[in-house]
Length: 280
Ligand code: AMP
Picture 1: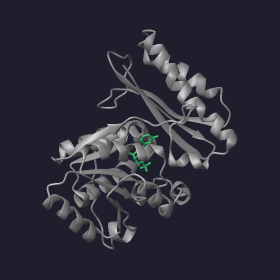
Picture 2 (picture 1 turned 180 degrees about the vertical axis):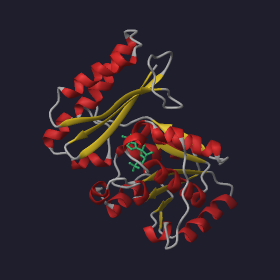
Picture 3 (picture 1 turned 180 degrees about the horizontal axis):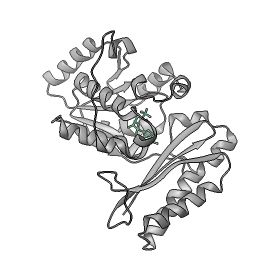
Picture 4 (picture 1 turned 90 degrees about the vertical axis):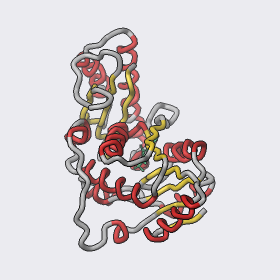
């Protein structure tokens, strides 16, 4: 496995893959890897000749300085974890490499970025679309792998490649959870024991939504109220949003026809966690 930190070297490596007609599977990450990230690498391994994983903590997508400062950084350990996964290249560029002095171009998407997390994290998704466009241009993947845990991000990336005519197949892999249902996240490392216990209410609220949907309740206000009461019963938790939205446009729904996304964001102490489930 090669670890590459420079864009030029990454491009040269990609040219050799393309020269030998190898397909490239790509999983972008911000590091502090867990089994959710690993699942993307394993999906990619099944469908491609060469696998590239990027580790880049993109400052442009943090709307909160504390969150960026406190985000776990574990590059050395991450590289060892990836080594076990039959990955071909780790791309871990520096900030100077990605955004050199004078950098002034951003990729902005409208509409889908205004929903859900976009309402409460101004600029976040423009940071994501900008860095993902750059990474796609550098790595030139045939397929790129994202997790359903960040559903809105994957919807935005699908729209990005469609709108900008990028010839990349976007694959969305299922959310990997701990035994109690908490979705794995690099931010979970910040939770203390009590907060970790409280965080289980997120999954319980999603299960509640699923139960109600299965019982033929289609009124989203009713479902959201029940989800909210599950979460409000729990200590240390503050609701950021609970929404039930169209699975493509992410617009709020008043009632569910066939399918919808139930999405939750909460603060547990100083940590913000998100999760979702598809109701169908
Ligand atoms: P991040 O490092 O948080 O930017 O995440 C990198 C990729 O891993 C994104 O596509 C995430 O959606 C995905 N991911 C993060 N957590 C999980 C999880 N628990 N299950 C599946 N994929 C995940």
